[in-house]
Structures are given as C-alpha cells and as structure tokens.
Image (cartoon, rainbow, N blue to C red):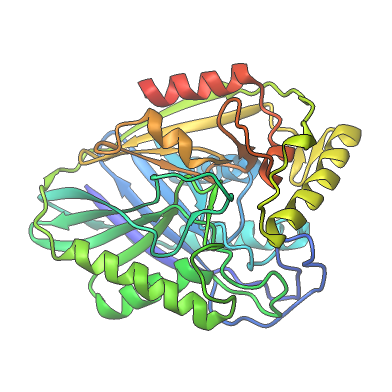
Length: 388
C-alpha cells in the first residue's frame, strides 16, 4: 500500500467575499488564520482514493468530476476515485466567485501532481466514537437530538499512528456573520492544535450530519476567543479518545458509489405553526428563509445552481469503519438509519445541496424553506443508508 498527504494553502490571491451568510457582501483580503485543502491519498493494487477536505463552505460536483478525470488521465489509471468534502466554514473565500473557483481548481491540479507517495506496511486502522456537545447541539428551540458525535479514525504502520481523521457534526458558525476576515473557524483551530502537539501525524477533518446542529445554544459569545474556548473543549475530548485502548483491524479500501435521482416538490408551509418561544436569531432566520423560498419558487434555482436533480452517495469502507459521504446539509436525524458502531455519515461532500429535514418535520425553521426534496427522495436516501 502507498500513502501521501499534503496541505495546500487555498487563500485567494485577490479579494473575494466570504460565503455562508447573506450579509457577506464586502470583498475582503484579511485572513485571521489559514485556509487549507488537506489532501490524503491511499492506494493499493485495486483502489486509489484521493480525498480533499476543504476549508470552504462547499465544493461543487462538476469540479470534483473534473479533478477525477484529470488525475485519471495524468496517472493513466481508471481506479482513481476522488472524494471531496468541506469543513463548511462560513468564513472562507466564496465558492460563488467563478474567478476564485478557477484559481482553486488550477492550484489543486498543480499541487496534487507533485505529491510524493511512500510505501507503508502492516497497516491497520481503528475507530472511536464519543457523544459530546463540546461545540454544538440542536439549534432549533424545542427540538433535541442525541446525535452530536466526535469520531476518530486512526491509521497505523505497525504501532505508529501516521494519519488521523477527526469527525464532528456541528456548523462552524461560532463567529459573528460579519467578521471582517477569513477563518477556518473551529475545525481549523482544532487541527492546528493537534498538528502542533502530534507533529509525527497528519490530520484531516470531516464535517458530519450538521444540518440541525450549531453552537447557537452552547457558545457564550461570537468572537474568536469563543472559537478557541469551544475548540479547546473539543480538543480535550479528542485527547481523551487518544488515551483509550483501541481495536486495530487491517486497513482495507473498498469504494462504492450510489448515484441518486432527486425529485423536488414545493409543499406549502403552514406558518401558523411557528413557535412563540423562538430566539430572536431563529425569528430572523425564518424571515430570511421566506425570502429564499420565494426566490426558489420564482427561479427554480439554488445558490449554487439549479435544484440538484442528481447526487452521488459514496461509501468508503476502511475496515474499522465505513464512511458514507453525502452532498446535502442533512439533519442529524438521518444518523438513526445507520449503525454508528460501524458507519459514519459525512455531509457537504461531492457537491453541495440544501437542507434535508426528516420526513414530516413539525418545527418551522429556516432550513424548512430550502428543503424541497420529495418524500419519495427522502425514502430513497433512507433506503440507501440502511443498506449501504
């Protein structure tokens, strides 16, 4: 087996807006902390996986497809599978800016082609899971979930832990929406601490099913000090997992892709069901949701293009755990359809799609206004998650 890892600085060389909040309309050129694409690659005689974890809101499916085709042609191999995912920070360079996206794509092609691979032997992996609200929990008043999880996947050559994947499912929206700088938010802060304290290990981050989870009812404020405070809590939880005894199993690479057709319907929303005990922030987001819904119904367009009609769900079995990559901002409810002892559900992967709420969700929230997936499509998602 062979392995390679690279951190690529993806900060724009020219000013762009941020991407994640409707108020982010000013072009900026100040970076509070660095933005990276963390590229991890594993290959054996059968499969070659190249995974990108971006400090971005999202990375679209078209450019994922282009990256895969480029690398297959360059390396003369049809066994290369590219998986893209995002930390979903709302304070990165805008993926709505075509000039930045073109710059990013060219940069990725250049940098990945220079990656050096090394042979690894006696490779095993381990998987750990911990329920924690260190950074976030349900952001919807009256609606709770028990699916806030920190997961840790470690890869070993003999006894050496050379690569680790951090998984957590919470929106990186601790900061105020209008901060005048770019930031990788809590995922970047936590990864930097881990890299400093474990210099002989590479780290990457997977954002989980965080559609309904944020720091709204956990944080004390929205400054970078609050990012550090919550990030330190998550870091301590990660370190607690590092102290546990683990079950190591031989590493395998088994890639499966499931194309899915999405159908949409504009079901009327009964606004009389809006709860009276909502926070002011929730009331404001519902107002914004109404505006977004009107745009959808008039133009049939989403922020990043037309309503998604086709999606790709990927299962990556690593032996110790299977990672399921899903494009949308899916609610943590959908984690109930997988065995969390054996599988993980990652959002914001291989493209970008709007929220996917549970079927017949009763709470009126911002997320509901952009969820246009039909019940039929949601049932198909559940079927895949239960059987993948």
